[in-house]
Structures are given as structure tokens and as C-alpha cells.
Image 1 (cartoon, rainbow, N blue to C red):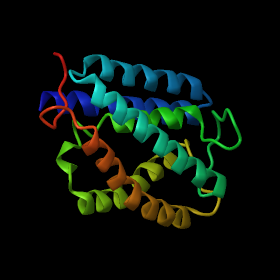
Image 2 (cartoon, rainbow, N blue to C red):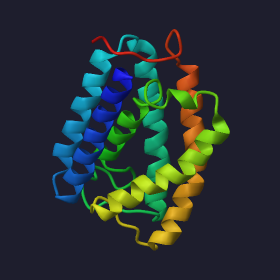
Image 3 (cartoon, helix red, strand yellow):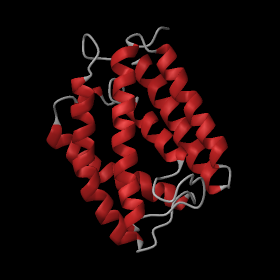
Image 4 (cartoon, one colour):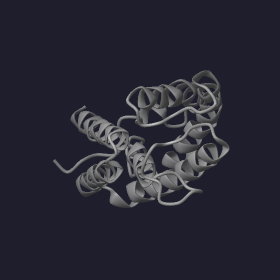
Length: 179
């Protein structure tokens, strides 16, 4: 339970730092905070190998998926772009941070692909809507349309993330911290 609480606290702190940093015109500060928290997670993790692979693979998947959606105009970010064809660095780091949840707080989703699909269809759009309300993202085609697309995408992406985490599962199946 302690490891789960630490994991969620690291993730949520980074999520807010990155979204608020982007919305206030400080995307690099938010990205730095997020990267620091991913590093803290990896330093504290007992089985670093599986965790590093999970973080990298999910980070790449998420960056590609969100870059395609951003390029298609589903959403736009105010700041932090370092290339016109890829999402801002802070969003890539957010995906790295999101990946840290799968062997800890989201471990209960292991091999539950339909449940993870439903959770993704609800949770992904909810996170983006919260980010929009905080000023970190804009829905140029309209909120409703963007959220419907996000729900469909997240219904596929979330079980893929669970599959990746299952593939790179640490010994015993659950991540733990060295505390």
C-alpha cells in the first residue's frame, strides 16, 4: 500500500507540474520536474530493468499516438514544442511518468484488457479535459469531438500499455520501492 501511495504521489505531482508549467508558459520547468520525478521513481524501484523497458516502450507509444492526434488537430498545446511534427517534450515525459504506474498503482489491471480498455476510454479523456480546464491543452475542433476521439484512442492504447507492462513484468509481477 505504501509503494502504491508513493507511486501515485510521484505521478500526480509530475502531472500537475507539467500541465501547469505548460499552461503558464513554463513548459521546460514542468518537463524538468516530471523528469526528476521519473528519475526518483527509477532510483527507488527494486527491479529497474523491467521498469526501464516499460517506461521507454510506453513513452514511445504514447508520444507517437499523441503526435498523430496533435498533427490531425484533435488537440493543440500552447507551449513546449521542439518540432512541428512531435508533441512537446513535457508530454513525452508525462507518458514516461504514466508508464511508472503499471507495475505499482495500476498493477491490478494486469491481463485485464477489457477492463483497461473501459478505464482508458473514460480516464484518458478525463485527464485531457482536466488539462484543458487548467490551460495546458486546447481542443480546436471542439471539446465534444476531441473527447470522443480521445475515448476511442485510449480504449485501444490503455490495453496496449497493460500488455507492454505484462511483457516486462518484474519478478513476482509487482513493482516495489527500496524504502
